[in-house]
Picture 1 (cartoon, rainbow, N blue to C red):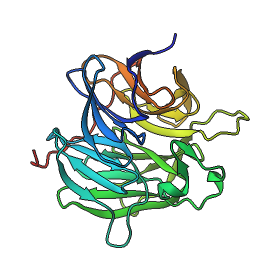
Picture 2: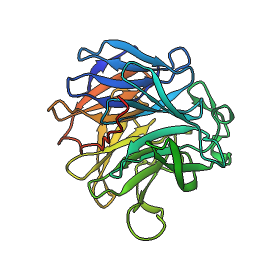
Picture 3: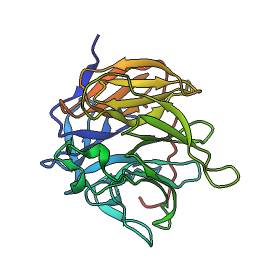
Length: 299
């Protein structure tokens, strides 16, 4: 049975955030939309903010403000619920962001951001990758941002092949994936010493199709499993606590970009999908792990 639809007619949706009233936020990455959108409980579209670039991942803080990974503007932007810009961060003292992709708050109240590692015009045309994308000099990065100070604290890692999805587990380990290899990495940010990149698992299915496919957005369930959308693989791949693939939840659209667990009391997954421009709903075996939502007193 195919998933049901929550919303359709969207311009390359990404960055889903579920809200307690049954509504949700998404981004629309296509050039003719380029906005943060609120979908009401009936799936009707209400534009919150047009960024003019390519808004990708989203995170919500405890004040109700929305943090945007803006890939083409090469910035992390914070807006209030009415769409007014509050803060913009474009990099650290040494370098600008290249392609901010996704972001998540950690248990310390800091914001953790993936940067895919190349300026958009060098590897992408519309929604498609250039032909030689696998051979390009990718420098995917992970940044830590202090939202109160409005600055980058440190670069956690670099030289990753298209850094993409990001999530924290219940033990506060950070997970980040690499779309070109299919790998998911784990970092112990709060232990002793410098955080090390450890291979946790891989989500790719073997086939001979000459297309780009790889992991995208991901979230943890309260069952301890990691739920990861896999672009051009038409599924949400589920990994257990040891990084073993234990399930593949099939979707309607071929190109899922991200997911959110419903937070209105229903065990559901809300999956953004770009080839058909829709949000799909499918049953989840559990609720999602509660996300960190620090307060900063900005709203």
